[in-house]
Image (tube, rainbow, N blue to C red):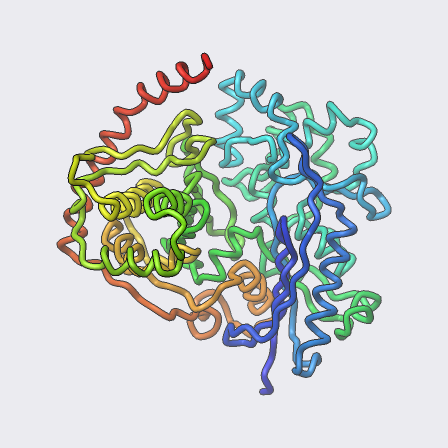
Length: 505
């Protein structure tokens, strides 16, 4: 059989990326275009038609630059930014700009809903996520109450990638991983109709399209679109996934009890679980790409920004590459808690959101003495972030494979530390644009080129490095974690007092 290829489209907030992969998951060609976001203090919107134009431009550029025979392209998968409100009228045209996931206009509505503690907790129990200003469920209610003239025009509500897939195929669906962010009863995998009724938006259920799974065939590429970009009409397009779920799939975290960690601006952790178990923790659950397993996600407000801050404060404006090489060399053989410091990594100006929620939380060092060095402090910062990851995974006692990605995954000292803290092997994937890769994977399974999720190790999931834990370090870090948690709890009063004092200025 001749070589086949798959396209993965990633419609992010800030840019669109389209990548071409071979059947072994190797990137062949990439094209990207920056998006425009209309934002002020509270609003965050995007022109839906301009986003579609950017996708077309990327696809055209991709096909124009590739040297492969386009007839060998077997399928397309789409991923994109989640939540927000993307709505079209009866003619398939946007009723307004899309309201994005980071829009803040519904904050007062969320605060009002929180006062009804029973309903607030019921929403979390049923849809598996606490509602936020940018949640689709919240924005439906906000739009109905505040922009009735726009709401009345809506025929269909879905999310970003589903809009793009509709433009590709002409078919309207809402894929489960996206819909399950706030609108699906996770125990039943169907729309949470009773929640819509209790929120006074029962009529909105009629605006929600049929649900499909990530690897379902959602339609075929329309001829007019195919002609514009230089592809053959009738190319199958998969359901695709929410970007964070697609990232986990792109890494290879698709089997029961797999764990995916993204060590980036935020510290995101995802666990693949066989069934939904309701809780009231500050996490989110989404339906995974197979349509019946689940991804439980929890993300700290800040991961790598802790290290960036420490290096900048302690080492100044020296050459960044040389600085990190110097730090890595100095810290390479350090033992757990050798610095004598504990660091709590809640450095974000917004406080902390996971594994606990406290907008007053701050970062701090414990244990500084006159002989404490800047290397001690950097080492403690890295340990603090690693311990926060362990904290987010506290319910995952039965781990299968642990995948790590993000900018922090390039730091060999940090990766070893995380392996020791979790007492688990860490797998580093040989890929960068993981969300697009996950989208292409969904297309691969849809077409049958990849048999099923049990066979992705033979194709898309390529591991370039495996880091094993050091047993002595793992034992010490378990002891340190217990002290880390105790001191964290003891800081709550300080955070409250600090907030009160600063509010007087």
